[in-house]
Image 1 (cartoon, rainbow over the protein chains, first blue to last red):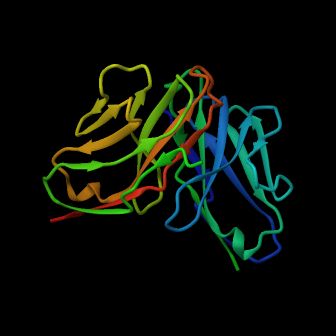
Image 2 (cartoon, rainbow over the protein chains, first blue to last red; image 1 turned 180 degrees about the vertical axis):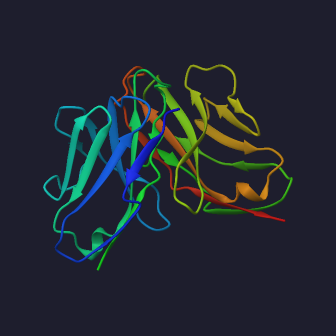
Image 3 (cartoon, rainbow over the protein chains, first blue to last red; image 1 turned 135 degrees about the vertical axis):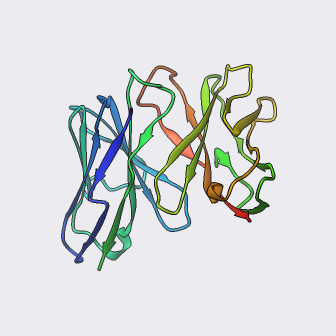
Length: 117
Length: 118
């Protein structure tokens, strides 16, 4: 139980294009979803928190117009990197939590590696 | 101010030996949770163990135990009888705030890379 998937697992795109990453909770309804970014050999940095049906809350220093987050349903959140540039190349990981599960923790997706050329 | 500190960027341990990964934290909240996650080279985050601030007993999950010393604000992970498959990055993390809120954030330490020697 408590499986989170991400799609795609790998994406390579040209500079200036937009990339959408999906995060799905497969067997539970996610009250809240989180998006993290991890650069090589670094820790996970929280980018934003999203609750179903409401606007995401972004962490300080994260551009909301560049990283668009939509949490349209209790099982799906999307992160769109708009006008991607090489410095956006990173490992993006989502996680989900639910009041109905072990609410002390989050369940992580497998991550999406983004390479912007 | 850094809230989760992992002072060991890398560790080498002989297979079958026990290993302790250090973690200290800083918070003014009375209610908080501490976690350890394992991240193998594939990148997935694997939940290992959880300790609530009000839990009196140290948490244990199989070969993993969490040495929780509240007064010292430390939450070290102990892996007994290490295996080659334990080689990975290990992150200590903390969740502050409302215990019953699924929206409370988890923040991560910088990680420790553990390598198990055969």
